[in-house]
Figure (cartoon, rainbow, N blue to C red):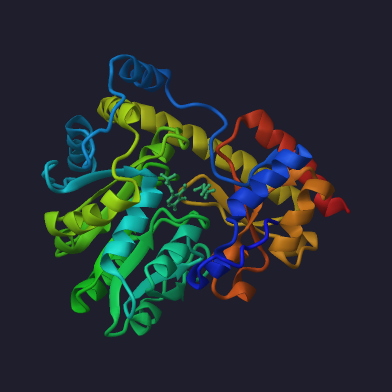
Length: 390
Ligand code: PMP
Ligand code: GLN
């Protein structure tokens, strides 16, 4: 573990090194199979790579416009119209960012400062807590509940105070794989409207849903288009996580607030790759359907293997992660378990307790990524079978 510098500002003190960096470093150091950090081990479609190469070769190598190139903003608006019936002006209602991470950070920093509160669910994606802290706002966390159960709307209502500005929602949800239902979203929409909240919706796994579960953007619910920022990223949809091209869309007034902050975080984002992502978004939606189908079968491959090895598993409805309960294989603490797993089994996973304020609630769970080649999943499963036998 890297030591936390004594010079680090107090509000970031609890955020030393991300669990993803720690676990990927552990995988590199031990040669273990890395099912920790979520990144595919196979590139996305070659046509998209060719579009990037063509953009690099045709002189798109200086600062792009701050909002993102017009071609990409138009492609994003068309994507939102085609999939969800959202009607966006690409000139004022779409902003290209450096991955979804920057979109979320800029949105949170733009809308919540000292004295303000942000309500989100736990387990939560780690950047949420860090970003809320960076802005000096306070997070209020509601437990997601049992993996396949419904959220408790009364608990969400109880977490909202007069200081609440933002509801930060992630569906499909990392790390549990839960896809929020229409009824849950209706309840959340009602709360947002009643308490005049802005919803920031992290939808990076919007296309990675299984068994007929459909992602419903909160922005499509009555009364929500005016108060919702929707965030997504090409990293997940097209398997180019290293490109870091994301976006946020919503009403011009809110996007403008996000733009103000984004200007001073990165100014602009990856010019040539924006051309390639515009080309990707214009491609036939079958590309995404193929990825979804491949992932559904990988999900079953890994879940079957984990179950056979003795882990407790709830099959995810979306994303490329599965959360496993380590108690049936004799595990107690996910962090200890994951730090030991390269030695005990030659596999790296991510302990999800770091995504909880209530560490006890998260202690027995670890997350495995299945966006990996079938032979890699099989190898990992074979190794994990040893854990239960010890
Ligand atoms: N939100 C969630 C829920 C994620 O899992 C990720 C994964 N990287 C991100 C945001 C960040 O996306 P990006 O890599 O586009 O910044
Ligand atoms: N979103 C990916 C995950 O959850 C990668 C995260 C990261 O590296 N920051 O594993």
